[in-house]
Amino acid sequence: MPIAVRSLMAYPIPDLRRTVGARDAILYALSTGYGSNPLDAAHLRRVQERDLIVTPTLPNVVADAGAWMEDAGVDWQQLVHAEHRLTIHRPVPVGVPLLSRSRMRSVVDRGPGKGMFATFDRTIVAAGDETLVATMSQTNACRGDGGCGSAGTPPEPLRPVPSRSCDATLALTIPEDAALLYRLNGDLNLLHADPAYAAKAGFPRPILHGLCTFGYAGYAIGRLLGAQDFADIGFIAARFTAVVFPGDTLEFSVWRDGQDVYFRACVPSRETIVLDYGNARLA
Image 1: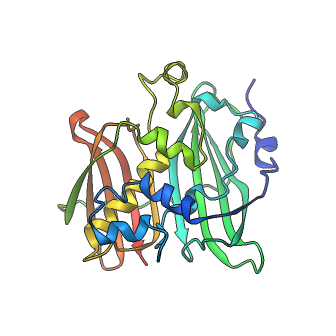
Image 2: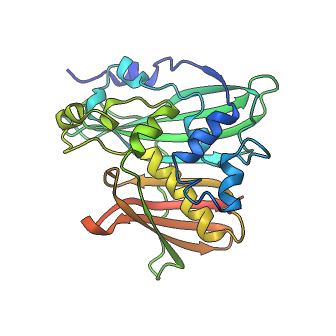
Image 3: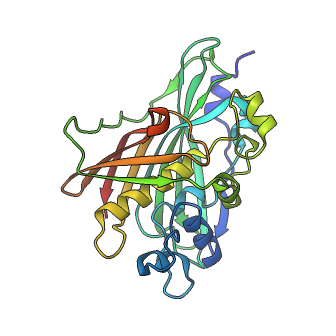
């Protein structure tokens, strides 16, 4: 029986509070590429407690409500991340209580047996004075659902990457244990750790978290467009077009137009684009 679209749109996603410590920020940085060159001062500024510079995409793992869609009745084993957008209003403050609020935005039904796209928005503020830290919009492809009807207004489409040749490329090999490390940021979905569970979901082995790939995209943009340090971003968004497996080598292509940035990621060995419609803006 399909999920009731009204009940999903009205589902009371719990508010969550969290204080991010230096260890949390460093763990996230290490799980998204920073620190891979431990003699580089730019890397060390992201992974050492002294004068720590917080990684821009850290808000993605701060006070996330987790598997609430499973509680709402969505087939959790058949859910994958489809698209994500993050606006950074200020770096995540370390040692400051934060509050995360989420609400459903839209459901786009593809029909019975064809799944649906469910989008929710999330805001992170300082718990005391409500200072805005970050806003996000996450779209999940619910492959085991559908036939429930559509509701709400989905986000505006992301802009495609330019048709001209890219300005820069960077190849990054994802460590074999990347998903096991990244899950310590809070996403404990067995799809990223348990081979038997991944097989039941239709994958030959556990897949990398979409937001881990997203974090590596932020790293690649920062590395390619920075000089002696990483360039920071104020906005980043992309569509997840294929899964990434730990051990894959990703090739990131970047186009720059002033403060606007476009990007794409592919796995050359499989001739597969895994991130597309990448839009970003430098801070």
